[in-house]
Length: 540
Image (tube, rainbow, N blue to C red):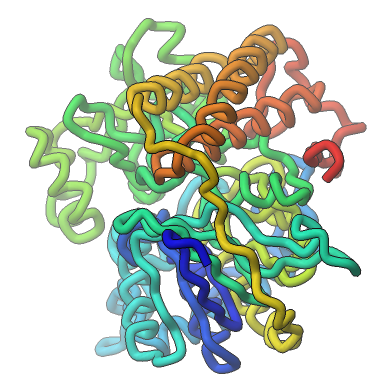
C-alpha cells in the first residue's frame, strides 16, 4: 500500500448518513460489519433539515388508493404506479417500526374521547387528506436523532465521519475477468488527507441530492450530487434529472441561508400574496395555495417577473400566536431572530432548488444495474416521484426502499472477492496551488444553472448552459489529474457532472411536464408520458 493509503474491508459500505443510509445500516448490521461514510459529522444530511414530515396512510379517513392517486397526479404522468403502490402500502408498517425505535411524532387530544391522543396529521400541497406525520416543524431532526441513537448502540457499525467517497471500485475497471460488479470505493479522509481503499461486496449509495448545483437552494452544503456522479462515472444509467423541484417558499432575507418555510404553513391555512397584498394562487390553480409544488413555484416565479418584486409573501397571520408557537416553533424562532414576527407579518419567500426527482436508475428495493450496488433515497430514480414529487413522500420512500434494500442485500453480502484491491495512485500529482480556481468554477456552475436551467427554460438557454459547462468540465478534469484530491475539488467535479446531466436530460425532453417547463414546448406531449430521459457514460 502507498504511504497515504490504508486498506479496510466490510460486508457493507454505506455512503451517506440520512434516513436511507442509517436505516439500511441498522438492518444490515444484523448480517455483517457495516461502514457508514459521511462527509461531515453523522448528523449532516438533508434528512436532518426536513421540516414538514413523512406522508403515510394512518387515519380512518384516508386510504392507500387516495395516497396513490395524489402521488400519481402530482407526478404528471411519469410515476410508475406499481412502485407508488408498493411504497404507499408498506409505509405504515415502516413508520410503526420507526416509532418503536423511539421516534416521537406530534400528537393531539381527541376532543370526543377525553384522555385519548392520536397523531396530529397535517396536510400539504397536492394531498387530498391530512396524512403527514410530523414532529412539530423539525421532523427530519427527530428521525435523524432516532436512527443515530440506534446506530450508536450497534457494535457492528463503524461511522467514518469527515470522509468523502471519491469513486466506486468495480471489477471491470480493474480488468478482472467475468461480469462486472462493485468491489468497494476509494474514500478521502478530509482531515488527514489520506485515501482509504474500502473493500465491500455491497455498496449503498444513500448520498442524497444535488441542490448545491444551483445558486439558491434549501439544501445543506453537503448536497453536491456525489453518489449520482460516481454512479454515472461507473457506467450506470441515470434518468429524469431535468425534474428539479424548486420549493416554493424559501425565506428571503440577506442573513438567512437556505432556510425553508415548511409547506405545512400553507397546509395550516397560510396563503401567498403578491406585491399588492392580494392572493394570486387562485388565478393559477383551483387548489390555490395547496396546489403541487411545480405549479406553486411557477406561479411565484411568474408573479415576481410580472411585478418586478424580489419576493412574494406567505401570510398566516390569521392564526393565533399560540397556534403558530405550537405548530411552527423553529420557523417562528428563526423569523424572530431576523426581526420578523410571522404571527403579525407575512413572511417574504422565494422559490429555491430543493429536490431531485431523477437519479440513478434503481428498483424499489434499491437494486441497480451494477451487481452489489444499491441506490436508495433521493439519489435513486425508482419511479415514485415521476415529474414532480408529492410533498413529504421523500422520507417515506427512503424508509421503505432502505428496508427492502437491506433485505435484498443480505442475500448477496457473502459474495466476496478475496483478492486485494489496488491502492489509490497519487502519481506525480502536486498539492493544489490555486484554490481560487475551484471557488470560481463552483460559483460559475451554480450561477449558470440558476440563470439558464431554472424554473422556466428555453432550448437556447439550455444549449448555452451546455457549452459553458463543457468548458468548465475540461478545466476541472485537467485540474483533477494534475493535483492531489481535496474535498473541495471532488465536490466541484461532482457538481459539474451533475449540472451537465441535468442539462442533458432537459434537452432530451421536447415538452413541458411537471417540474420541466420550457417556453419552446409549453404543453405536455402525450407521447412522452411514461417515457424517461436516460443518460449513460459513452462506452459505459
